[in-house]
Length: 84
Image (tube, rainbow, N blue to C red; front, side, top):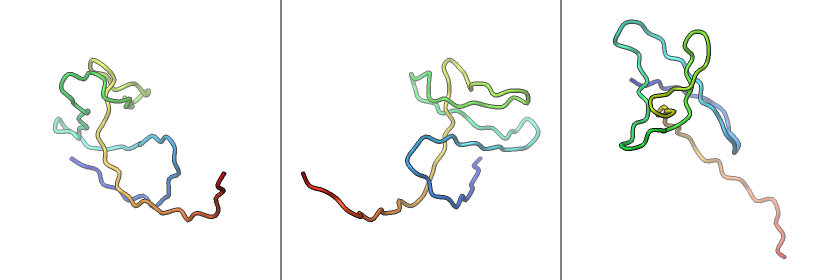
């Protein structure tokens, strides 16, 4: 399964959280499998809402959820500089 969205924004350097919701019903999901790496028990810091509160997504260690961000790097024009 994949959620695909288009977000028309510019992001400055920094730290960001991705927040998404996927709805459905039944035993077939939707599911978001955590990142899995052989021999690694902590793969991220994802949290999930269980209907009452936000809790860490934990198996043996805290888990991460996979995602891909695609975009365009916008060039920055140099306005001035000094040489010392």
